[in-house]
Amino acid sequence: MDERLKKRLVGATVLISLVVIFVPMLLEHGPIIETGITESNIPPRPDTYFSSRVLPLESETLSPTLDEIVPLQSDDKPEPVQTPPPRAGKPAQPVAKPVKPVPVTQRVGLSAWVVQVGSFGKRENAEKVEKILKSKKFPAFIKRAGVKEKTLFRVMVGPEIDRKLAEQMLGKVNRQLKPMKLKGTLKSYQ
Image (cartoon, rainbow, N blue to C red; front, top):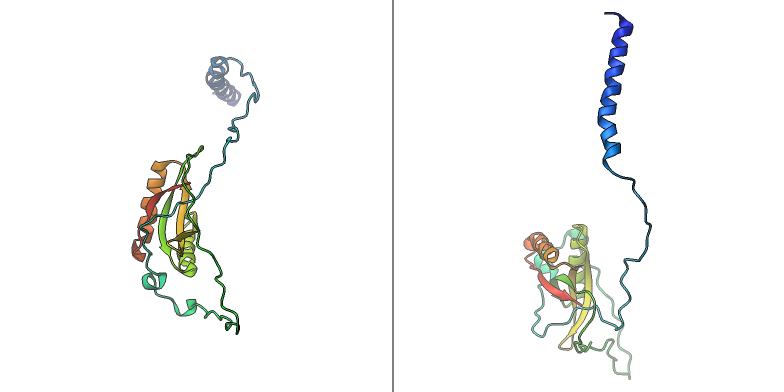
């Protein structure tokens, strides 16, 4: 067969294939008309103020210290804290007043969920747990709370709006916390 005839047949086959593929695509749908943005999908601002905080529990127990859970490495030893001697003649003033719980009111807006990993009496212990969780890519934060005239530092993960996703996050957090002998609980975040 002649070389020119072969090239023509291959070219004709390619063109017919393209027509068979693309012509039905062009004829399948009508023209697309852009309507543009007509409204905003941002909800209006709520009429009333609502607080977004975690309410303290009356029967909350302290979590074990992180030193009891994870032993310190030789290069991780904390530096001793120097406290100035008390002034003569003046009684020492308390630094912080205990936080009084605010009465719960009916709130308007979204509800969310957080995983409470633990409550610590020392901020350093809470910061160590928070650092470990953040290194494992969890959105961890510390919430300060006053319970029975004590200041507690709660380590939280979240918040998550969907309860099912929050329960899944609780399972992932608990799997990571198992070697540290801590167990998270799901709490309402307000």
